[in-house]
Image 1: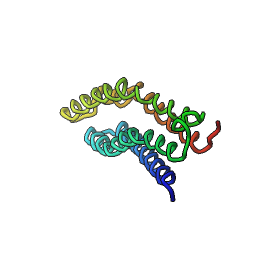
Image 2: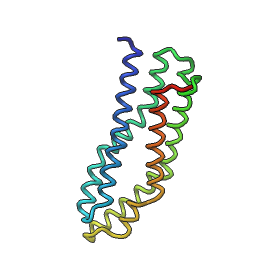
Image 3: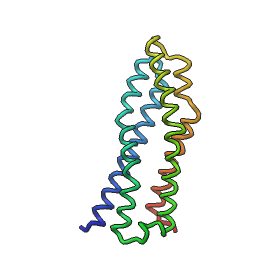
Length: 159
């Protein structure tokens, strides 16, 4: 087993963690949005926190691990001259603007709505609206779609 194999293994493990985080967060927040009791919604949203950490860590590591793998395998320009690798990098980078434009500001709105609902002791219309935020839904779908396309590109290497 050479360094290229170890780099590839690390890249794949980071990707698995990243995808697990995306799916775990999606499932728990979806359940929280449907909760009738505010404390259940809160507990489910809190249970999503470790998955959110997996998403953040995976997002920070998956691209460098992929570039390291390309370098270890001898691809020129870290693989950016290979169509499927370049497309994968561009697609992954396209998700980054969602963080400051959608996830962070809408996350603050969600936290305020959750705190307000918990202080009242009921799921409020503001909390329901925060759970149903169309921009957050779009951003999550975009993120999942982008990752799915990148996985397909990595497996199929179509160009």
